[in-house]
Image (cartoon, one colour):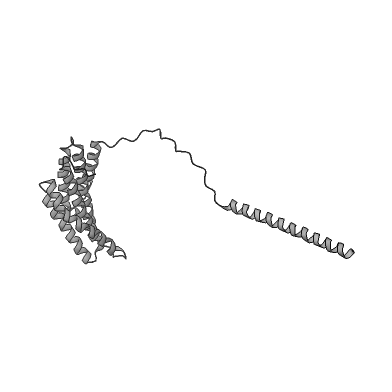
Length: 230
């Protein structure tokens, strides 16, 4: 009999311990997942829409401001006192820019034509900047110089082929000179590339492309009612 009661007590103690272990395991699991959830980044609460700006929009630059800025840039370039300013290409580009500015002044009543001619004048000055920089001493080539110059010349090749088309539309009296100079600068850029003067090649290629861009703006200015393709 005593042996039977001892067996029953042992069984009850074992069941109690088993239940206690099970309960502890469940609680430990719950705490683990609660801690894991707390470590997961929670989404930010939805932000409030930004407050409307009270200040008025800035007015667009006036026509005289566009013209004044372009004239100021031309004056600064013409004021170059280095021997590089005696370069024939640079002088021609300054002359072309002055012509385009005169045309812009006489077309102020046509906003589209006026803005395109000012853009053309600035593109010519971009070319003049590159021509002057190309006259500087060439630094030793670096690893990616060849690739960068080749990329510029690849695009320049196709732009030069468009120059005659834009010149024909613009009907400018000097457009043939622009085409000739763009082509000449491209050929010189190719020669510089072959001589491993990659910096000079890139600059002359950029100058050539800028002249063609000026021709494109001139062609747009000469089209009173440009076609809009939808």
